[in-house]
Length: 188
Image (cartoon, helix red, strand yellow):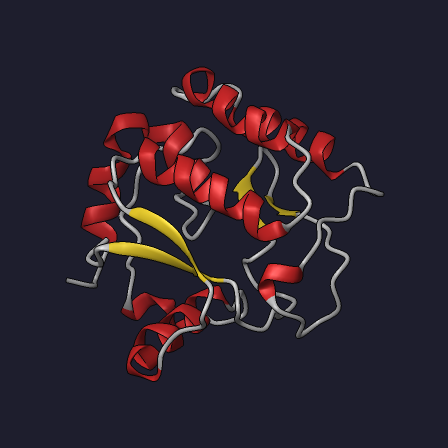
C-alpha cells in the first residue's frame, strides 16, 4: 500500500502454479482453492492468457463464495459486485484480474491507479519485480518479510487461517478491512 500506483505487467511470462489465476477461501470444512482455468501454455505472455470457459468454473466460484461467505457479516453488501464481474465473459485473464483488483482496492479503501504496463518492467524496477514474483509464487512461504497477517474475525472455525484471498477479509471485516491490511503490512 506504500506505492503510488499498481502496475499489471502484461509483458511478463505467465507461469502456472501462481496466484495469477487462483485464490484460496475458507469454507466450513477446509481451505478451498478456486482456479480460473486458462487456455494458455506455460510461459506465454500474461496479456495473451485466455480464460477457458469449457469448464463451468463461474458457477463453481459463485457457489463456493456463497457457501463460504454467505453468512459473513458483509457478504450481502459486497457479493453483488463480485457476482457482476464473474458474470461478464472476459476473453483474457488479465482483464478479469484488473476488474477484480480494482473492486478489491476500492472496497478496502485503497485509492491507487491500476494500469497495464505494456513495456515490461524497467531494469530500475527489478527489486519491485522480484518482490512481486516472490509473492505470486503460491509455493513460496517467504512472503512474511512483506506481510505478517493480523488476525481478524472469520465465519468458520475458532482458529485464524491466514493467507486467504482478500475476499475473506472483505466479507468478514467490511469497512475495517483497510485497518487490518495496514496492521499486517511490513512494507513502509
